[in-house]
View 1 (cartoon, rainbow, N blue to C red):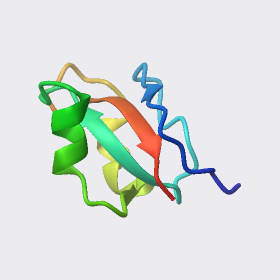
View 2 (tube, rainbow, N blue to C red):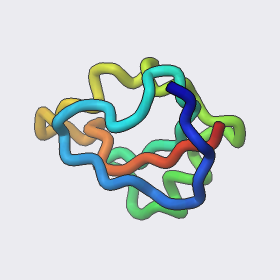
View 3 (spheres, rainbow, N blue to C red):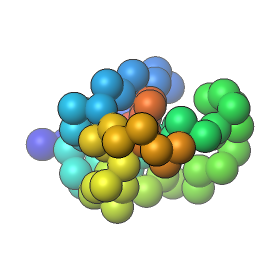
View 4 (cartoon, helix red, strand yellow):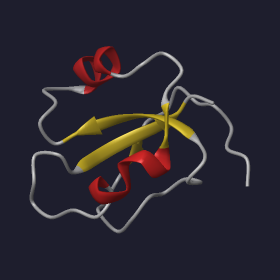
Length: 72
């Protein structure tokens, strides 16, 4: 399933990755101060969602992903 790039962030509830594993995403971790900080920390082309496999399921860690957006 191909994902469409979006400027909208998707809230992540910790139940798993809400997009295709192959979608290139920007992510906001729990430790990021805000989405602007998260955006600056992500590479412009995004990262395939599957790279963050351990971070989609919330474990109460600062590395939990709390939001994402598809960039490609």
